[in-house]
Image (cartoon, rainbow, N blue to C red):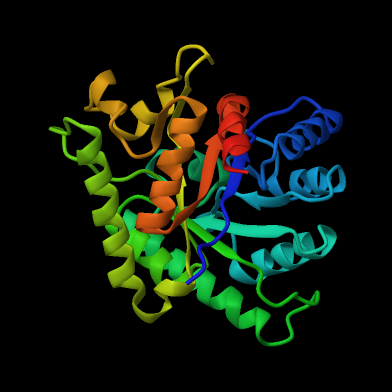
Length: 291
């Protein structure tokens, strides 16, 4: 079976003007990235018009949400927005959606929305994806291009299971490891177990999935000190040394990191990588090595 091509996404969370959003997207495209992404939080720019503005400034990159909070939307209204954005971006939209993290509770309160428990939020995510797909299959208006890819990002077992069962792109937002992780081999073993979990949950559809990994840190030799903040947010009990053993923490020369990603592709089928904006330029050096 032919391996999927690598795809690299960069997430932007803030800009001061339309021109700045456009410049960010153009910069990502020039650096070789395949997708530009925005989050979905109150207090930040609304994702849909932002994506349209970035698509208008570029010719190649796809635009996507990383990720929409399913609890903020009614499915029929969200389906309308998804179809419209895909139309206005000439089919370059990746529909990323999640259940809504625990730390979003204050946003629900500001919006006047109830904040369900984790299991209920995941059940709502499943129902939302299924209802939207049903609408798309039944002459939903505006017209829908067949095959808008659905990305679901998650870390916990229940959420990753929903991603494996329903999504086109399964984005692993970190890989659970024990507090005693003591080597890169241990981190790689944890990644292998997570992919096995996805394989079991996906069943017959596993071969058609695009597997992704959130890059929690990039330390390319020669690009200064790495930013540990994102890795720390997901792994609060680990030491700085242990964070470097995580499969989502890439370090070494650009060529060494490229070799690591080739191994992740060949051994585990992971080809889609998302990185935050501050590490965009560093990861671009790895993209050059891979292409």
